[in-house]
Image (cartoon, rainbow, N blue to C red; front, side, top):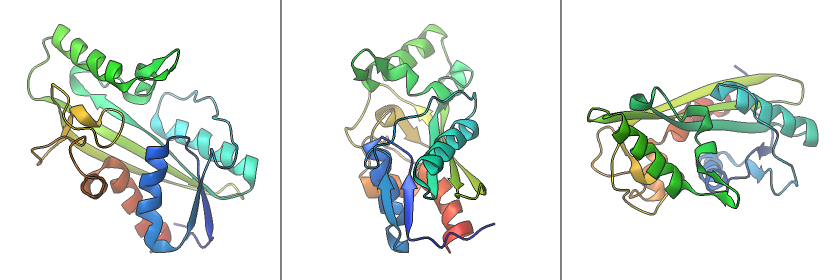
Length: 202
């Protein structure tokens, strides 16, 4: 596994919440983290049907555009009672003509579970795949999985996305109730990042 010895890392996301999480998780390693929006990058079209493939598209596009090593993630929620949906289409479920509405996406998730009479607990997993790509074409891939269940009604206004309806295993609160520090200690992204830090930064 290749060690990261650069001083600047491009995180290929336009999601401010994800960028803040990555900055917090990478803070101890004295690496300057810049986001795709700060670099004026457009979002590439994600054409793969799996998290690793879409993360690779974003990482490679960022490397090619800037010449910097880039870290990209593709993440989402897979609901067992919906045969793994929305999965790689997690953000798509929130798309409207005027941006993303995750309240609408959460309502759809619960409505479809109700329509299927899905049994309780309504288990699900938050999944995150990271691709760390270098300008010479080398890449490392890391996966984080956080198991839990879908609850209703939504709880909490912390976090982002589907956090208010996802209660991780072993916890009595949703990710939407947890403080950023609490979430970063358990999240699917932090699990994947911990693997990356251990493999490439430690």
